[in-house]
Amino acid sequence: MPLSANELAERIWDGIRPVDEGKTFALVPIPDRDELKRSNVASIDLRLGRWFRTMQHTRLSFVEIGKNKGDKVNDGALTKEHYARFNDYFVLHPGQFVIGTTLEWMRFPYDLAGYVTGKSSLGRRGLIIETAAGIHPGFTGCLTLELANVGAAPIRLNPGVKICQVFIHHVSGGTGMAQTQFVGYRKPGLGKISEDKELAALGKTFFDA
Amino acid sequence: MSSAPLEKEFCIQKLNAVLALINKLLESEFPHPDTKAALDTLQTVFSTELNRLTSLSDKLSLDTTLGYCLDANVRIVKLQLFLGMLIRSSNLRNAFEMFFPIKILARQMLTPDHAKLILSSEWHFSPFTYPVSPEELPGFIFIGFPASESQNALLIPLAAHELGHVIWRRKGRGVKADFDPAIRDCILDLYRNNWTRIKTDCFDGREIDKSKLETDLFTIGTWGQSATLAQRQLEEIFCDFIGVFIFGPSFLHAFRYLVAPSLGKSRSVKYPSLRARAKYMKFAAEHYGIPTSDNFVDGFQEQLTRLPKRSTAIVEMADSATEQLYPKLIELVDKHHGEAKPYTTYMTEVKNTRVSLENLIPAANTDSIAVIVNAGWEIRLALEKWDLSLREKDKQKIEVEKMRILNDLLLKSFEVYEFRKRLKRHAT
Image (cartoon, rainbow over all chains, first blue to last red):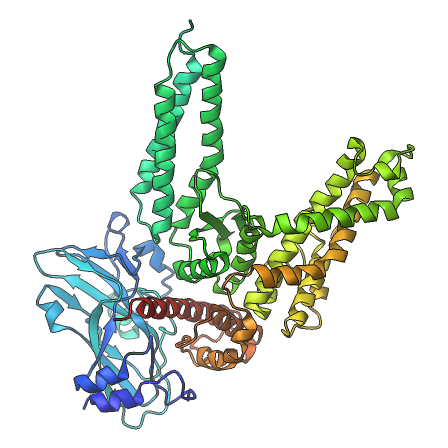
């Protein structure tokens, strides 16, 4: 069950209370908690950050998503970085895919997790946001957003725009930080694909020649 | 009557090449509008130069035409350097989040001037500024961080030093003009008080009347060199004091990180020796009530100054003047820091911000970049105590990862500072 607006406003760190490693739920910049209470919604709107990454089409024949062991390829080799200032924009053309970040840096306590979804008003204009939607307890950093334009018209993405929303849930018995590779990033990144021993076994020859 | 020389044709071609380059650069993505504004200005400058040259009459004398060509060449040579800085300022390797806080600081320090800022990276290992922008780019300040450090948020305090140069040399209201008479008088006193040595080392023992020190062209040329060196040294110390005044201990840490023990075996005599400079910074910090580490000065090595006898005497007189005059720079900082607030105004906020950063939360509420960067330095200096329970087990890699996370936290804190300032300015 997601937290209500009142519960969210209560849990979101106000920037003044002492920080408790396991309990503090922080979003920075801090959202307007009074507005959140008034809105009575069960989610928090998140804004679009200023850094983007697109695939380097000119240098890629394909993207490997399975064989990852010993993968040393960094983001820079596969993608191109972009930056747009607050009063500027990034145009996402039909069929184009870009990764961005939330402007907000989040720090999840051990007893909360989140689900990110798009905003219906943006979706109706062709903007699809976030397919890997889960945020684990202890997550910290800016959330990488996968943005795709499935509409017919180019979409202007203004840094700072309310781009998605996050629903917050209690984690029953949550006591610690999830072991994740994504700790404290402010820029969008591809991340490494976790090692999959079963996939590696499936990829080997079964019958000897 | 003379026909147009080949030099004119070549100059027109070179100007067209520069304009083509500027047009190409104008097609770039600009992280900040000031870079584009500078390129627009340079485009106008070179277009005017080109029009001037193309409209020259072929009837002009060869000398006159070559004079115009020389002017064009000089402008190309001078401004090419700035074009390089402009293009590097839009390189994604830079931490663009540092731009806004430095520009705010520049506006505060240089009020009422509305400075435009070019924050760039340089391929020499020293923060770099053009204290006086070229006449073609009035009001622009160029600051470059070493390319390998251009993402390092912990070095932001060094920008205050670079802005200090602009204050020192500002036309009309600069510190330099105020302080020059004191430097001159001090140098003259030093020459009079060390006359025997000066005569031997600088004038080969020739009988020169000490009373004509201020009128004899030969002696003026000698003590004038000492005065110029002392001016340069005191300018550097003034800029350091500005850095300490605004950024407190973080300025000392950033300076130490970048420079200690030294960046070369020989000393540039336009600067005080590094040890002396460190001593002066410590003095300023203590004056402002800012704690410093006991071994701060010891981290800097003495540098060699191998010079001929005459030059040694000239430098030593300059060093002595600097040593005598540096405490007076505190008054000048008090008078010339503009609307920039001292670090001590905010220093009580550092602890809370450090706790926030240690818990992986960017600074959310502070109105001071100095608070953010000082909190960052406190974590950096006790990095081994910062427990992040990372998946990585290799100690070396953990340190690198911690630094990456700290840097991202600081840069995000700067961005939040910008976000809040923008909302506050345009609050409805």
